[in-house]
Image (tube, rainbow, N blue to C red; front, top):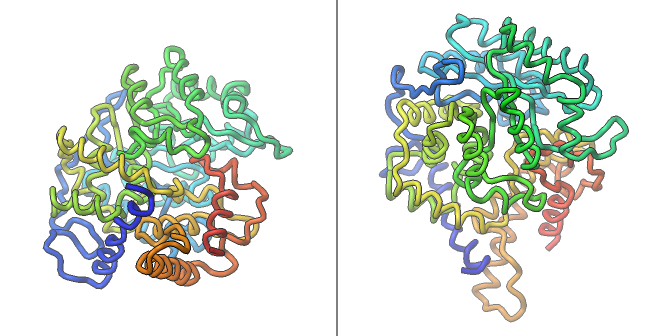
Length: 474
C-alpha cells in the first residue's frame, strides 16, 4: 500500500471521533470520550517490588502536565496558574485507589510542579506515597556541583519532604549548550552535568545517608551515553532507570528517530536493564497521547478484540506486561484519565502472546505515517517568537491520522482524486486557522534554533515547522 492509499485508509477515524463528540450511542462499554466505564476498584492495584523492597504501584502519576485554572489549557505549561484544588482532588483519588508513586521534576510546569505536588502530598502521611524527582540541571549555569546541590535541596523544600524516594539524573543522553550557546555533544554534556563536577559521587553519598532512597537516571537520545551510564552500574548500583516504552518504541524508536537513528528501541533498553536486574520506570506509554487516538484500522482491530476496553488500556497493558517494569508513569490531567488507567492496572491483565503480536502488527503499519514524534512535553516552550510548537505538531499529526494530508495527485489524476485532495486540503486549512491563533502559527518561525537542544525527542523543530508552512502554502 503506497502512502496515499495508506492515509486514505485512515479517513474513517475522523468520523468515529465526530460521532464520539456528538455523544452517539455506541455498543462498546466505553464513554463518549473513549474511556472504559464502570466501577473503579480501590483494593486491586497491581504492585511491583523495588530494589530496597518498596511496594510500588504499577501505575505511577506523572506530574509534567498538571491541570491549570484556564479552561481549555490544561497541561499547557506556559499559560495559566496551576489549579491546586483539582491537583489535590486527583492526588487524593489516586492514593485512595492504590496509586502510591508521584513523579515530578524541577522544570515541569515551568518550575511549578514540585511546589504543587508538595502541597498536595503533604496532606497525606509520608508512608502513603513515594515521590520521584530529578536533577534537571540542563541549564549550563547549574553544571557546577554547588548549583546542582542547590537544585537538590530546593526539591526537598518544594516537595516538603526530608528524603526523596526515587531520584534521577534527568535526560541522560541529550546534547546541551554551554553558557555561550555553543552546542555540546551528548557524551560531553553527560560528563559535565554529572561526572566531572563530582555531582554523581555526592548523590551516592546522599543515598548512603538516607536522603535519597533510590538513585537512577532518565534516558533520552544517544544510546552510547545510555550504555556508558549502565557500564557504571557495578560502581554506582543504579536502583532504577526511566525509559520511553510503548508498543511503537519497542521496535521502531531507532528507525523513527529524527536524529538519524541515535535513539534506541525500548526492546534494547529494557533488555539491557533486565540483564542487570535494574527496575524500569516507563514514560510516554501513550507516546504523547497518540496511542489513545489511533487510525481507524487500529481502532477496528482493537475494538473487535475487546469492545469494553479503551484504546489507552492496550498501551498501558503493553507497558506493564514486562516483569522488570516497576511503574508506568502517566500524566493524568482529567479524572477520566485517572479512572480509566486505574481500571487497567487494578489489576493488570498481562497481554497474551496473541495480543502482543496484534500490537506489534499495528505498530508496523502505524510507523508508515509521516508523523512528527512530538510527545507534547513543552520543553521547547515558550518560543521567543510566540509559536505554539507542540500545538502545531499536534494539529499536523491529527490531520495525518484523519487522512487530511494528502499529496497533490497531479493534473493527470482522476476527478475523484482531485476532489478528495481539495476536500482534504480545505479541511486542513480551515481547522488550522480555527485551532491556531494567527501569531502562533508555523510561519512565524525564523529558524533561530533556540528550541533544538531542549527537545528530548531530538526533533529538528525549525525544519518541521517549515514543512508545515509549506503544506499550508500548497
